[in-house]
Every structure is written in C-alpha cells, then in structure tokens.
Length: 213
Image (cartoon, rainbow, N blue to C red; front, side, top):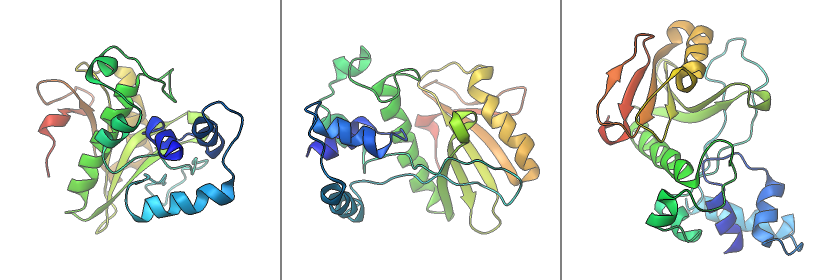
C-alpha cells in the first residue's frame, strides 16, 4: 500500500524510481528492494490500477534528446486523491506534498491526470495513441501528444489549472508547431475557464468541461 501511495503522490510527474522508493519508505531509511517492488508494480499495471503515460517523439523528424521517463498516472485521479488522504479543503488550500512544488500544487497534478484520462478515452475512438513529450532537462515539455494511427497527424495539449492563458502557457506548443509543421493539426490549452476560444497565435483554449470527441 505504501508503494501505491507513493505513485498517487507522484501522479502526473516523471518522478524517478529512487524518489518513489524514498516516498514509499516514509522517511524511515528502509527502502523496499527492487526485486520486491517490480512484481508488485507489474501486477498493478496489468490490473490497470497504474496507467503510465509513455514519452514519445511524435514524428520521424529531427527531434532529439527525448527524456524517456513515463508520467505516472492511476486509473482515476480520485483514487490518487483518496490514497494520499486529500480532502476538498486541503486541495483548495494547496496543502499536501507534491513531487513538483515549483510547478504547482497537488490539485494541479490531479487536474492534469483528469485531463489525461479524458483525452485517452476520446483518443481511443479515433484510434490514436497518447503520450507526452519532454526534452532533456525539461527544456521543452508538452503535457499530451495525441497522434492519429491512420496518418500520424498530431494534436498537442497543455493542461493548466486556471482560466487565464498567457504566452508562457503556449510557448511549448508554438515551438512544437515550428518543429512539426503541417503534422501538427492543432495546439490546445485545457483550462478551468468558462468558454472556449482561439488566441491570435492560433492556439485554442478549451475548458476541460467542454472537451469531447
């Protein structure tokens, strides 16, 4: 159970195996052995309780230095919240340990996990594969890459726990558009805002509540 709680705390991150082992040990210094945890993790993955998002290059072009670490997700973000003991009050007040304190709160991690789960469901009807993109040292990151199986066309998503979208929120999507050219069908920021619209730079802003196939 401690290992599963560690995964729940690391939801929507690429936390390393060692960080997960540290979290699972609860600071006691007694880390679970890899030989013990690997079969456990494999079983949870086969049961689809753990549902990691792979890292991929969405093209056969010149993109290089892709970080191959997957993003950690559980079958449902509500399960992750339950495992770490999060409540409505604690989430809204930004409480709780986060593996990405610089990038936001645990609520932000859960929101990204919810967006990932939703996009995966809709992509399955296309069909299309879903992954994330992270270049070496985090220099370039895109939260979700959806690539259609038929023609390899790409739709890229950033996820933001806010209603307002600025240049910092779209700059990686603009970079990816330059890299992929016509292969990138659209770039979208998923938000908590009330309305969908398209920015002057062509990036779409869509509330997660309005997302659909």
